[in-house]
Image 1 (cartoon, one colour):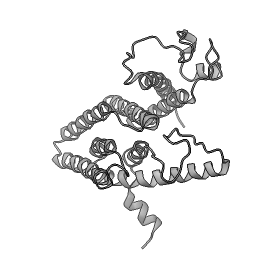
Image 2 (cartoon, rainbow, N blue to C red):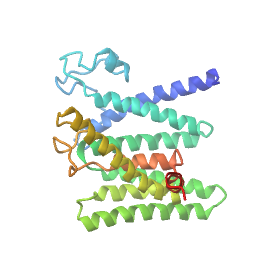
Image 3 (cartoon, helix red, strand yellow):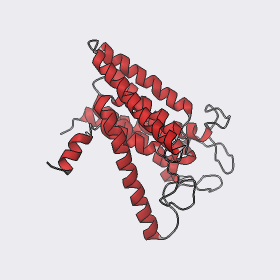
Image 4 (tube, rainbow, N blue to C red):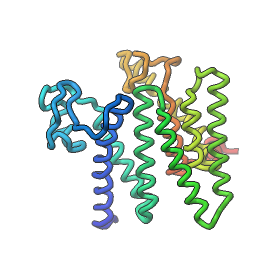
Length: 277
């Protein structure tokens, strides 16, 4: 049974997460547009400045029934999704690192970075270098913390080797296919993710990313065929998803990372369970 303080902690984590998700929506909308994130929020259709009651995360979207209160233009579901996803990620981080304020803050920042990278790659099929660089800074901080815990050089070596191994694998795929199989941005992204995951977990991250990618792609293809609409729930470059469609890989790589890092999914244990000797 959870105590009142524990429940309060989870509720506050979700609330703060949705607030940060609202900020991430602003970042995603204005990134690489030359516009500052400090400006007042406004409707993308009519340009009217949003009032205070239109800025509450999640609740404003539901209260306004996904429409602008000024011009009735539809508000993209993406905004609600990012807010809820950030709130849920903050709850997960709180459940794992509530006893360590430093790790709690660091992993909350990590969660926000991963969400921005995921959504940006889905929308634009590109991973901004500055986001990968920020993730690299986080990876260096994590290496420093691991070394500080008793000076364990082996854990630092494991992290670096995991990052290099994952990145070189994706770079090889990019080089051999001349960019047709995988993007160079994915190879860059794999480096800090592999460092953070470290060692065997980095290997599991790579394998799981392909499994997750194949599974989700097959599900989307099946739903598309079932509905016969020629549309999917994700906005890829082509209007209709086919086996040859250009699919953003960063979301799959990040899902593989989450499974390996947060949930300790071990590819060797999974395969041995699926294929008993």
